[in-house]
Amino acid sequence: MTNKSDKNFPYEIKELTPDENEEIRNLRKAKALDFVRIGPKGYFLTKRYAEEAANIYNFPIKNDDIFVVSYPKSGTTWTQELVWLLQNNLDYEKAKSVMLNDRFPFLEITIFDEADAVRESAGKMQNDGISDLVNAMLPLTVDQIKELPSPRFIKTHLPMSLLPPNMLDTAKVVYIARDPRDVVVSFYHHHKLMKIISPDTGFKQDLDLFIQNKILWTPYFDHVMEAWQKRNHPNMLFLFYEELSKDLSASIRRVAKFLGKEISDEQVTTLREHLKFDNFKNNASVNMEHLKDVGIFQKNEAFVRKGKVGGWRDYFDDEMTAKADKWIADNIRDTDFRFPHF
Image (cartoon, rainbow, N blue to C red; front, side):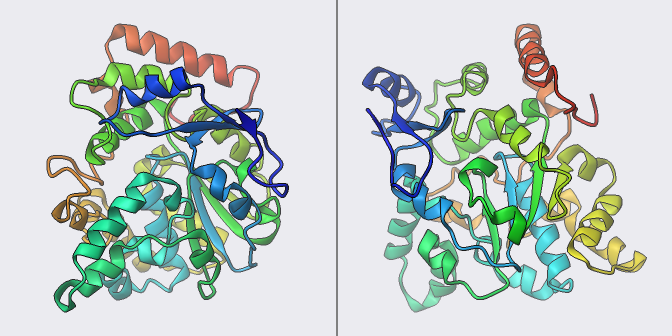
């Protein structure tokens, strides 16, 4: 079936065939998920996206909004915390006391079954003793995010073409990109964390699905290239995860300049320590550990895991390495896009 979700949404939404859906379902834990492909690039999303496509595309943008945009597992959470602290005068006390997903909500969270699971778990926990935790768990709808007071901080994994066309001319956008080989490793563990991947599904199969554009938000390179092509817009800051990892102080100064914020050497040092991976991993306001206690996350996986540049080498055999190298080369050929560490 082919349809458009709304006359105010410009792209065709194509449902996968029953056989295609079944192929994906067989890799999941008996979830009756349905998927769609969006527009000429065929972005792969859940069928529920069709219900929100026009609402997101026509989301009213304010000139003091700040968006962090990325393909998942590219350093999004790290970038959110960096951006929020710089824009909020390095208010570490609030950053530590208020969950990041409350300070910086996820625009399209309600198109996923996991949002329903969080609401169900939160509903079971409604009592005075854990009311703060319940409130931190509840995902905001697109309409609720619209009503947030200024300035709004919004995270999304949608590509630029599926976001409001006036977004970049009105608001500031920080895009973070990462080596796709490290992305697919991190996403593999994230799937296991979210109890999506069945126990007998291995990493090699996930890599194949990623390259075949059968993982959510793919195709990866179209996602990244849409932002790369806009990297010179004054309201766009394009970052690489590898640059943050190599020189976090320089990256802090670059983001501060983009946001129009003055920052001293002493403040850079303090913020760098706050964002240092070991400290970040143990920061309860960003590591989502509370979701393990209510059964949303697996206890043997971590939301903030290793953050290692080049960690993909621990997972790829020679065949996978050759396949990924060819895929990357094919997609960046005839472009000026290069990862900084290649």
